[in-house]
Length: 232
Ligand code: CA
Image (cartoon, rainbow, N blue to C red; front, side):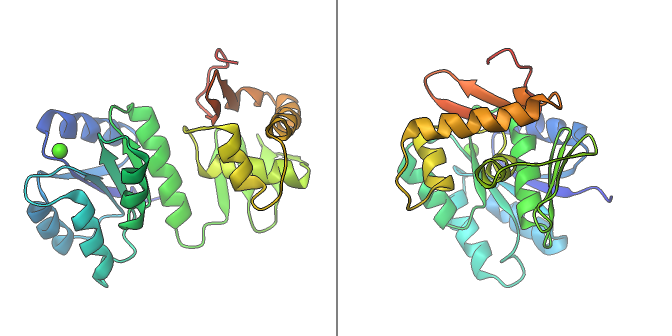
């Protein structure tokens, strides 16, 4: 596999360099820009596979820049992950409507950033059929799931749960958020989520992966193939 090229647009140099270092270590080729003007020149020169775009930039907001890129035929499909220090829910939604594929709130860990980038690249990849995390591989066309190469069988709800988690790693979801995504339009109680999470974990446990589904005390659930299992 050829290495993916990521362009980082961030004016805070220490942060930009730290992120570049983390991404290079994860196997990405990285170029850097300090503002939207430099990013534009960089993109015109060579289209990256993904744009990591800070919200607050000196010449133009990252949000405006993302919108401009979406209006341009050459960059319409360019995956964009926004970096934001803002945490208000409205801003997050605005960022996504503005054309970002995902966002990461500062401060973030290199591990979280890499997981998000991988997920966005998988989602936006040319009709990618495989979702992968750690030992788990899911083929979303055949619905076959393997763990360390051994096929496993899940009920339909657990399948949807696992698919949802594989598409959104390293992020905490409350029970009600999981409900909305998995049972949209159907009334079920929040503890139903726990029941299906338990069933999913039981199957994963047989293959040593139950710890991927983490319980985050007072918050909900997080899927992480890097989890240690200590927080369960
Ligand atoms: Ca900034």
